Image 1 (cartoon, rainbow, N blue to C red):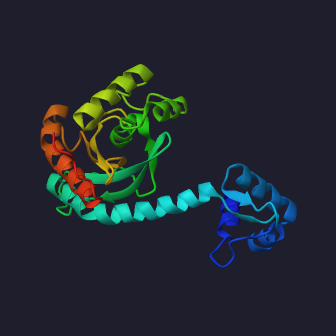
Image 2 (image 1 turned 30 degrees about the horizontal axis):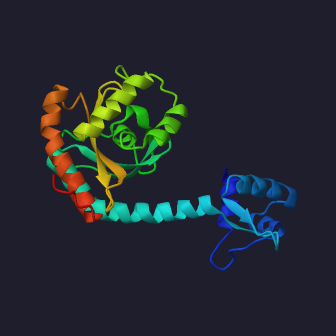
Image 3 (image 1 turned 90 degrees about the vertical axis):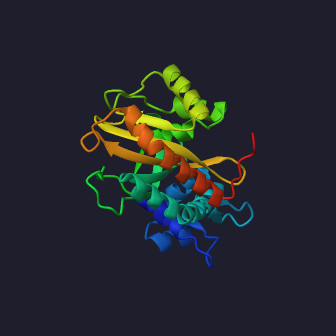
Length: 256
């Protein structure tokens, strides 16, 4: 993987079209080894070959990654203040994540400025990824996939038991996602790990498309109460936060 990334990193604004020999020199590998990596990256559409010059340039998947990174940076910039306000109001850590196939990827994470005893470090950070099927943010994102994409994602998902209440049956998960889509909030009640609970809601862009999810996570050791009691405390500020982030992205809900 490291060598493949080095090959991709050799492409710059000044050197956007490179041959195998150019790439071999840039990454410090021999031509045959470089060619193997280039062939794999081309097959995966991270590179594409010019049929006339036989040289290579970045392919559509690499370009998509670049645009996704730009979009992610803009999203976190706009979401930062509401996300921090959510953490401060609840006293719990608030996070934002994006969908990446069967996973959810953390792109922002805010702890309460009150330094209250309710804060808990779950050993997660920006860039961490967790399986979507057993996390609140993941389920909030899965609930808004179209049927074909959801089916493809679940086909790639190993629905192993990770916590005492993990949903491991595909039909039960699909039914749970339908309820989340209707209610607007996803709950993780010890599905990922014992004692861990979290609540998540979707973030929408100007077109109404769900582009991210925000959650509030808490462990039973710092909030030993029922899910219902915790929801009553967490859901109102969570819904307010995602509404504010969505508004900053240009989303305007239509009137009923």
